[in-house]
Length: 289
Image (cartoon, rainbow, N blue to C red; front, side, top):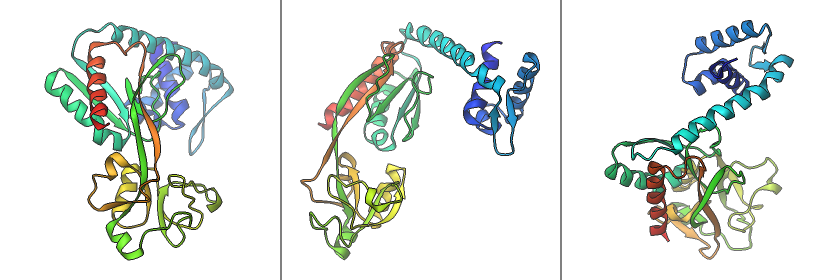
């Protein structure tokens, strides 16, 4: 079995559907279906059970999964090693970050790189999910968690903090919460939480058990918009919230620090184009201190 067949098999195994696999591979669903059918014919084995909602691995498919992943790692290792030898200030860099960090730090850094080196092209993915650098879903990531993989190089960019904020309109209408009252009588907008109110996360150390959770989201951008619209009180990154004229900080002495890391695969870290981008991103964080 060649690697091209293996990558189609892995995409379906991971996505669970032809549509999901086609999005990962950037091909149409019919092509994915044909490639899986051809692979099954070549191996004289059924690799997936076709269920209405998803494709499920058979025992033969499960047996193929490990060898196919080994082929994937070998192919990606070749790509990284070849890319790591590149000393040209040109080519593509895939950058993964969050929307807030991207807006404040990464986009300005990319702008500097593009002005100085127009041959470098950037693909930027903003997501709350941790991107898999080993599989080359990205070449470099700016994230708030330090990885523990020995294949990755992590560089601390700085320490930022989150604080508690609400809109001026909200504070004018409802007043500010009192410290120690667990937001009694106040509305809260938060990242998605467990159903049980007893498990709600505190905001910068202030309990939230007496507050009323009125809005939940997985997106920092949506959390900002909800707070600015006056939905309620939110815990937000200060580097952005302090610049929002419609927001005021509540309990300003309450804050929670968090580290920001630049993470890249060791095989790509020292390429010329990566070093230029890394330097630009680090400069943006240094200016923010």
